[in-house]
Amino acid sequence: MNDSETNGTRGLALVTGASTGIGYELARGLAARRYDLVLVADDDAVRPVAAEFAPQGITAHAIEADLATNVGLAEVRRSLDALERPIEVAALNAGVGAYGRFDRIPIDADLRVIALNVTATVRLAKYVLPPMVDRGHGRVLFTSSSTAALPGTLFATYAASEAFVHSFAATIRDELADTGVSITTLMPGITDTDFFDRAGMENTKIARGPKADPEDVAQQGLEGLFAGKDRVEVGAAQRV
Image 1 (cartoon, rainbow, N blue to C red):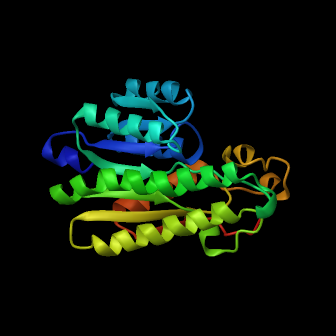
Image 2 (image 1 turned 45 degrees about the vertical axis):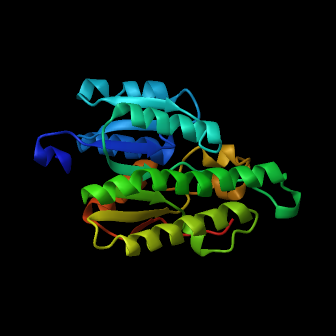
């Protein structure tokens, strides 16, 4: 039973980066807790993912939108507004990396990392948190990374963006301590997702090495979220 079902209604959970990897597993875990879902991803795979939950009696809305763009963020906001339902849980999980020496990476790749990992996270947090504070309850899970605590060699913009997310989430948790809204940061180590392919790292040593199971990462993240923990670290931090 989720938080809202204690009052006779089913809660709504938002998950970004929901078509694969940790985001997909977060969606599965929230569905198991009987939340209806809003699933956001930048590819059309999010639509069949949303359809998976219908046999469980879970209503899942799919939004195909690129959160690294103003158009994509506006589409998500319009879609959420149209539902006219409060968001009880938000898992702000979408992220991307750009691999290589900073002076050799195209600036557009670095700016996309910042737009998705930082700007979109801040804008979505600004959207979901004020209504939660007004209601006096809600939960937000920010996916950062173990790299937030390390030098991001060959991953400078990504590591810096995840350090931002970690600091941002910890600060908001402190600010909202007496509001009934709970903030948790998920900090996974190297995990078996398509992140490495998207970052152009598929042939690197770290991409071929041992990885955590995204289902386990998501499960531990949700357990920490619902236990009210400040952060959940899964797997060892590794330098690239």
